[in-house]
Image (tube, rainbow, N blue to C red; front, side):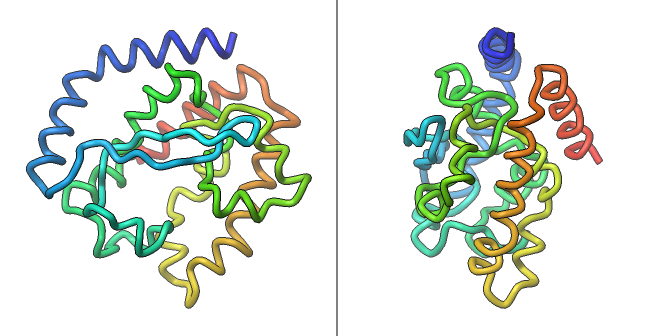
Length: 195
């Protein structure tokens, strides 16, 4: 059921939102130099790497100065990127990842390899399912950038506090997951974006 839902609604989403994709792509291109789509290697199901698609929201090669985005006013974020991130529009290209089978609508958010290498054996259980565009942890940490901005050492705070809590929430999700709960997570996510 979940697989059929993912394929059907990612395809419909790409078709219906294609005009929005074109407008965002044009604005991203006009706002700053660089590619329209940002592709980052993330870790997916069964600990296998895949390329995650996003609309580019930062200046080219920004990830070389750090993988975490700290604060809403991170100087690497473009003017357009600020709004795309605020309303989660930068995540729309992940519909492509869902259609390809790399991701699902709901599941643990895919992490970069650097941080996955820090997981213990129990935490690695989150890699037993397809990662998602949204999850319970994404809802709880919607303002993660602002939390990190208040820390003296954002990366250390992420590794020691935020990341373990996200994994804990995702392990709880694994034990209780169902198609109806996934639908609930999708609606909660939409409500958070609108508010």
